Image 1 (cartoon, one colour):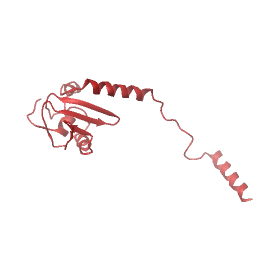
Image 2 (cartoon, rainbow, N blue to C red; image 1 turned 45 degrees about the horizontal axis):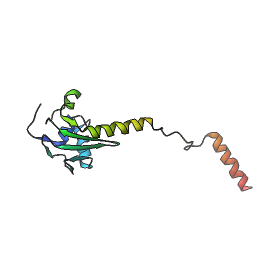
Image 3 (cartoon, rainbow, N blue to C red; image 1 turned 135 degrees about the horizontal axis):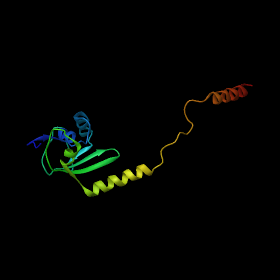
Image 4 (tube, one colour; image 1 turned 90 degrees about the vertical axis):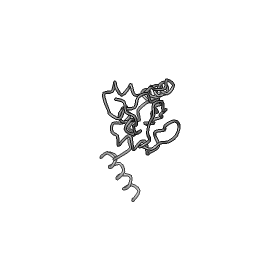
Length: 130
């Protein structure tokens, strides 16, 4: 399970932050992953004790690397690869609660007009042309 050198994108995939290694690499390239407070590249070699900030909008994960592994395994094993910052976890859970409570956007009647709306528009246009 333990490797001596692991690329950042491989580790993020193994730790189940992303479904594919390509998605992990894309997020790193987009600047959504910081290693020890600095932006990184997908091939960055990780070390035990590195602090990562992984942003998956609208959430941000603050973790510390405990074990290096480049092989994806079950979720229970993936959870042992890192330790999450308690403050970051509390902030993420707070945001998740707020998003659950927030009202969902409702349909406002915009879009394609109904047959009735179209007939009204035609009637108004005809009235203007008189």
